[in-house]
Length: 383
Image (cartoon, rainbow, N blue to C red):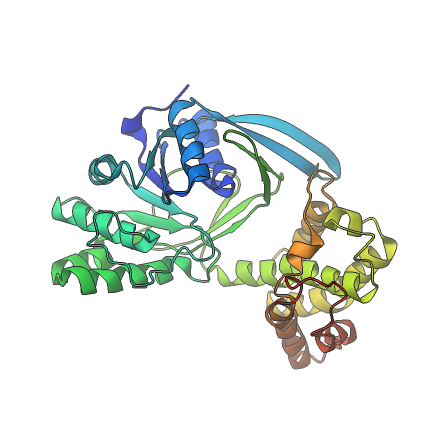
């Protein structure tokens, strides 16, 4: 059953399959299992035709399908769920007045996942009738709420940017100072609104048409505690933590590092023509053994000293299950994009940490020496 719009206290910017398979799905579960009343209004932020088509489906369907496919404790999982937390969907370009009215009267939380360039303002102004950028739209809506003398909101961005809540706050605050020159509004943004850093982790691998998603069983939404924080609902995948840094480092240097080291070995062993997906790489003993050995002899011993209170072995085993997912077509060629940069961000810091603990890292060091290696005649490999 569709939730009433009057209960859509969560305004979600973005119709991406990730959000459909992550936050909106958690909200639906909370409504069904825990009696939560907090539904979602989805906002399509761009005017792209495919985005508008998805927004139209979200606006008119009572629910959408979410297929969970993968491994859980070594057992194949295939679940077909129905997500019914979405009470409506508005296209910012076409429905601005309705969006502003809802933002003023009903919103309590703001969720966003606007892509890698989602925080790019690029000369935008919130004084436009409909600002082009997400920060521009958000600033304009927050100013309307401020002028209506409404309480501040809690903002829970999900973009994969370090300290995303604080980064978004600084961008919006800068726009507010430039566009409105209202010290009271700036104080309201700083004091009345709650800007929260979060970290998301789930592979939502494919869309379903006209709207829906396919996701892996694993899911995490780590939310950094703040004195002002009140979450809209509870869910087993949500962890409210004192600091996100250990979670960010664990993800970067286990999940992300493992992907990059797998690509390094895939290139080095010249398996690019015979192996396409991560799941296929994990079935190749040369690749699986190389990955397991470097993690167990170099990466995990270092991280165990650097992050002594984190469940690193459990996380590594769950990562292996995710890599083994027989339903996931995760292309190694895609992971290989910006490979040199990923070697620097994901592997090099572990080598530096290891020196502090006198732990040898010959395999990781060899991978760093292979920067600029390329066995694929494709410009996306090592941009």
